[in-house]
Amino acid sequence: MELKDITVLDKDIIKEFETLNIEQKEYLFSMAEQMYQSFGQLLVYSYLDSPEYIAQNWAMADDENPGIVETKILDDPYRIHIFINQIPEHLRAYKRSKFSKEIGFSKERQRWFLLMKTAFRELKKQGLKPFGEEKVVAMYKFHFLKKTDSDNYTISQINNTFRDVGLIKDDNINYLATFCDGKVNPKKPGVEITLLKEVDFGIYCHYLTQK
Image (tube, rainbow, N blue to C red; front, side, top):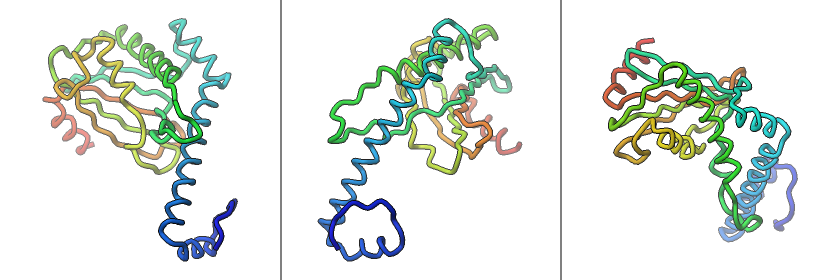
């Protein structure tokens, strides 16, 4: 079998792949991964440059909430709840490839800073209380369009905002732990974030299993 451009994969082509030696298989896998990463980067930048993104950016920068952030403060135990109708970028979108030697994160940082700024502004109106020196658990629940892995998406930029607004002392392991989960919810995709004290985490998990 010759190594050539393939536009459609079917069972016969997959069977032909089995006849390749290890070097040929590694070459094809490397090329496929490079293309995946490069198109992932293009997809991210296309979204960030879209008119919808720019319009929402300006709205949030002007201290408006154009229907993309929901917040509430809950008790028993005390916890903060945030829902954003967008999902953080896929990790693979940021991997370097030979087609893109340097990937900048400024737009992505700006995007999530504005989203979380909007969330905290709404929470302060509801009586938001910082956690101070206590260790906090951030529970992420991704609402996906279809079944996928919940650990493939970036949360570090969101974690940074908890520290930046003074909600927690720092986002290192002494003050923040994270828990990731997911569900298929095509009617309302996005990311659901619950923040609560680590000492209350077990109580809350028991509460969830009893629901």
